[in-house]
Length: 254
Image 1 (cartoon, one colour):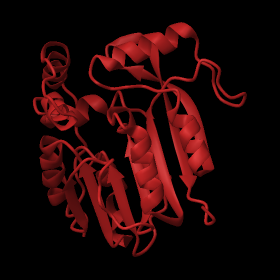
Image 2 (cartoon, rainbow, N blue to C red):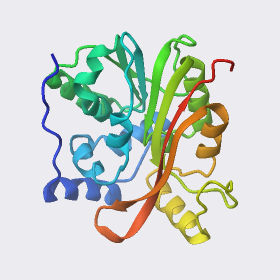
Image 3 (cartoon, one colour):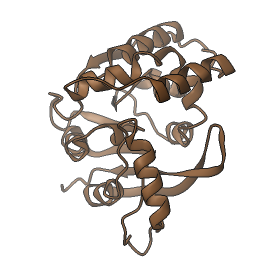
Image 4 (cartoon, one colour):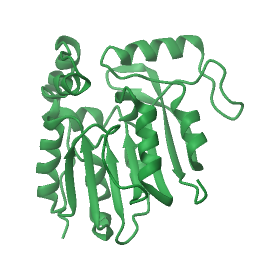
């Protein structure tokens, strides 16, 4: 039986460690995996408390998902397992949960947290989400929670999700983004300053916002839900970062 896990709480000391790491710790490494681990290793234990006030939409996205009995959930860029913890007892209906991430430090935290929570149908996979070997049409649900922007070959990750999803399977994504210079009529148009500021601000931490994520998701999946929003940033009270929520399904005929 899943146990109740106390949600991570932020503190000044915890926030200070994260902010210091973000500002003062250089990201090193010759490969994406090495750079990712360099970025997260020093902040893994404090990650959830700080990010809970920055990564908007995660809880809402997970709360709205339906977990099929006997199904398989693949969380790509799973980090500390926060999505699974949020789903809680609802995960008992699943046959398997696969948490995939390229940072061993984050997966170590995920293992500890899910063990405490009593979630015993989870598997942990240290792997690149663009090169994951997994059977086609074998997964019922794929999620990306603030991970697409950290995957350089993000379009390959979306194609992987499309390949492994069963016909009618669900993909759910939330992430930061910027619009294209000329967005589709039904989508929000960000001005030059907003596009430039957030693109460069996030790129300093190897988080790459794109105006192409949203169009790609709309092209590859049947849209069930799409929301574009602005969210608060800790210690920056006057500005808002753009983010979106997307839920789609794999067309039976694709």
